[in-house]
Amino acid sequence: MRQIFLDTETTGLYAEQGDRVIEIGCVEMVNRKLTGHNLHIYLNPERDSHEEALKVHGLTTEFLRDKPKFAEIADTFLAYVQDAEIIIHNAPFDLGFLNAELKRLGKLPVKEHVGSVRDTLVMAKEMFPGKRNSLDALCDRLEVDNSGRTLHGALLDAELLADVYINMTRGQDALLMDSNEPSPQKGIAVERVDLGNLDLPVLLANAQELAAHTDAMQQIDKASGGKALWKENA
Image (cartoon, rainbow, N blue to C red; front, side):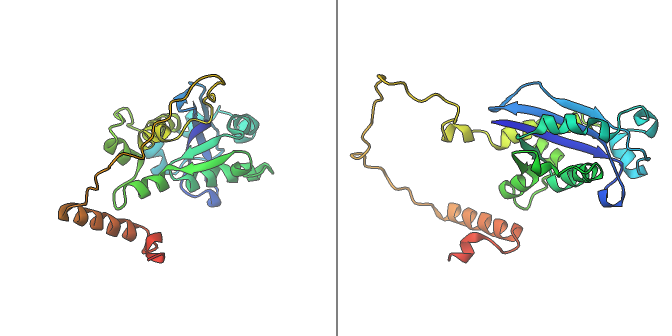
């Protein structure tokens, strides 16, 4: 599976009000291995960054003045992400800006070019309900080293996101056979183990464990705004 971790920096917070993309960072992972085939582009947004945004990314108008405009790199970007699973932290923000840039060029939105989009912020809220789930918070929680992140940068943040995602999904591929794994060859004996005669003990939860479970369910229910699926089926 080809996955692309993507992040952008922008002149401000509102694409619909004319703010533009000034940096794109993409990190490629194939079958859960980083390939080093990354994409990093600075862009001339043809406007100044808002003061607050400049404090976040530090990319000045002077620095960006001789960089390519989005129209010059659009096809390169779309070819790079074509048919991949795109992984973004707070996907609506980055997609909103990229789609606005594509719309100016008469091109289809990102989701029409890629295989799928996964939002790690949504994943984090499900895994850690009621907790802070910014990229920095996840780095701290999952012990991902972000000490070099004094300013936001699209490529650095995409690299951190890749580490965070790998930690969040650690062990998943041990539960299911990789679709790319070769099937057993003919003539190779596969030993079958009969578990039918095993007498497995049943361990019941104690009072402390039951209380912890109830508390966790209440937190998840609160985080979902009272829309927990188990309540519908109760």
